[in-house]
Image (cartoon, rainbow, N blue to C red; front, side, top):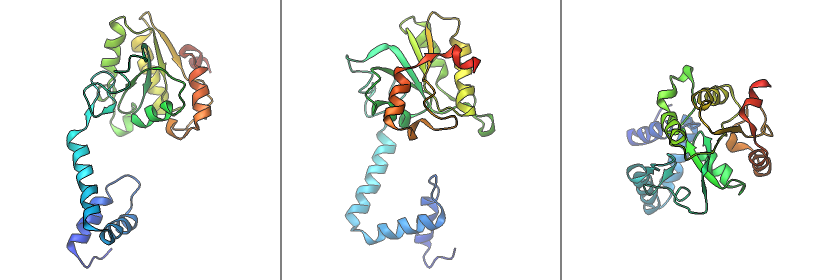
Length: 205
């Protein structure tokens, strides 16, 4: 792709680093921004810079937050004895949209994937184990996507927690095998949370 401007080329190259954005799509987006008032482009740049510099991870659940302890963890109406283990904030948002879960979350920050070089030490599994060790948790719900990586991560965490006095459950498989959690419709996802089953049952299927 030949560019008439080095500035345009640099902007397209940076935009195309985003997931799912190829060079042609990046060019279209950059040219769209060029047509907008300068103020609008400045607001976008400032919003992204503020987000990157000021965003925090909740000290309790590792969810993305504006403050040290996120709104979910600091809400006295939520039950901290039930923890739902998810991959990232997209899954938190998906489950919250169902209005069926009133406990806390634990965001792993990914899934175990040897192909991508992601091991247990790259995730927040250790802090989850420490929560359970403290004795304040009564149930851990595995709510990772039903993919090979998700099932591998579920099983690894299960082995870390199976000797503790805590109920280990998994969302019911109303979610199709291979589906990502964030794409499930709210009714199906909500029912899968409500009708969760002991994790041991999923090992027999």
